[in-house]
Image 1 (spheres, rainbow, N blue to C red):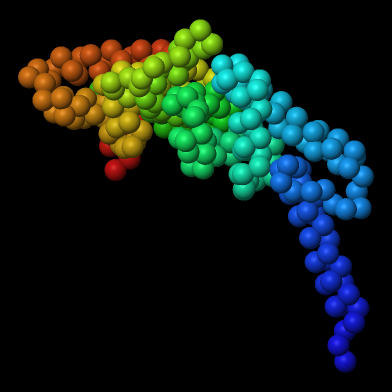
Image 2: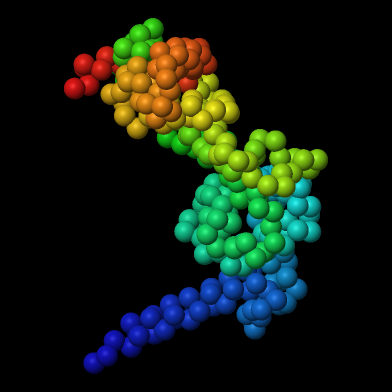
Length: 268
């Protein structure tokens, strides 16, 4: 005999899911989706406004410069589009800014009429909180804080992110917005130091390349990295590049970007 109670439970569960979907659809887009028939319209309007305003407020706090530049009306319209159209992959509030960035980059499209620099500005504003939540990376025991930066492998502090933008995002404000992207990518190194402070560093194309090489090959000595850069630049005096690079590495050690060196022979 069929299990009537099991069938009833399954039917009840399906009805619950349908009701939840109807409820959520109205919250996301009340103009296109009517509220559940057995819920008072006034009560649903309160729920709808409360949920939406929480998202507007939370994301406005994460992206204050973007919100201020766009103004309240345009900002609320942008968040409404995100709230209505984006399918989030995480239910956690701390992940919402990253979900919003994904929406801007992959889903919204240029036809929305947003400033061309909006995504990059929002990403730059998110980096601080994103890096603050990044996991700790323990420092290895075999690092020499005073080691030779040329003959040994410089060890970079972690966590840290090397970023490249088309716009000078650190200069964008209500009073100043770029009309066009820069001719060359703009490089930034953002790190979380031992005191859990987030530090932003602007890098030129050479220092960014040096950081990239050291980041991608932990066995690479400072000298080998700088010789590679000199070759890439086709510089007629590699010694000049090496000396300039050594100055950069020494400054990085002073600022905590380089925490020491590792003997390259010990990593082989």
